[in-house]
Image (cartoon, rainbow, N blue to C red; front, top):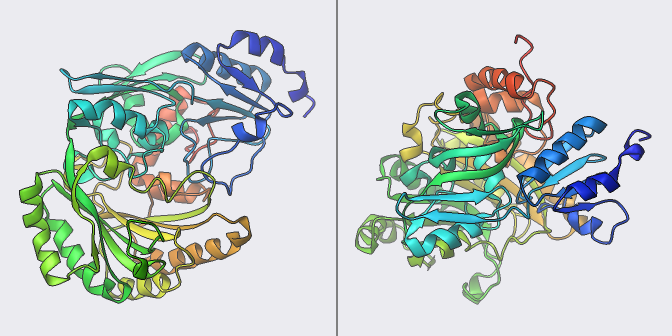
Length: 463
């Protein structure tokens, strides 16, 4: 700690257009919070960077003083990797801007932007970029891990729509990565997480999306086995314009849900159809006729409204514990195990989701980007969530037990954005054959593993 005390913070403050926050400052405790309230880390410094020059200065300060660095965009990371103990947080939240080029069909987003910012900017032009399902999620973290959500089956992962990115590297230099500049780096950041630098801006390809046909359908929990069997066959053959994720849940006691369903354990399908209302009605008619929902809230919905539908249920500051896997098929044995754990849902926040990652996303080669699991059908996530820290052990035990039982029925690895700090073997399993190439790229752009507060890929020792 003696070395840390010698940091010339006065000069650092003078060099930054943004704000430097230290322990003891009035806003320190608020500035170190992240979306997952289970994370309670205390950095030595927080640099709220206003521009690229601030990021370059922050990286150089950390290098000079031997500081651990974490990169914070939206702060949503499951493991809270946007904040570190005793180091420097490079906080990009002031770099929150968007620019839409409607003729080119592109949008540029700053490293501190959220998907709500992007949706707000693109929607008036009838455009959207594939992203997640919570609009307060940061553009940076979701993109670098892969990015999946309602539009994945139609237009691919977020990384499949990334045209270029600007980065500050570990040596403080600035580069652009795209298909013709720093191509190896561009390959690596499409799924390889924050291992390679601080991404200060993203350029995306946007698609014609304005009003979807979507929303949730709910059934009694005991209907889940037949819904899952039907869903497994349906999603494998469904046209790209149809997406639906499966969920176990307890119904929130909110105004959109009938009182008699409040806090009931149920299963759900959350739909997104981008082919127009008539085609959507036809696509959803079979499930409505075979398994009439207890509640059907599907209908025409503006894309930003669907993207932000779950924001009120999951505000910042809840306790989160995540476990994840990729899934190829759902056997009867797996369904039985799902049912056992669904019956033990601890509260209205905890859930299990199966997100389809086939369709357009599956037609990209598994080595074309760092994301390896192009052959998976779903990304599964199990989350124990609760507002009360006193219930931490309850939600962690439920999520771990659920995952322990289902993991043998998985494809092996997991979506890195859904992982806690689970160690090198899990990271390797999640990148499979792409791991060694990532390590080689890491050795070129960050040979000392300066950027290591992430789902880390250490540099190759063979270089």
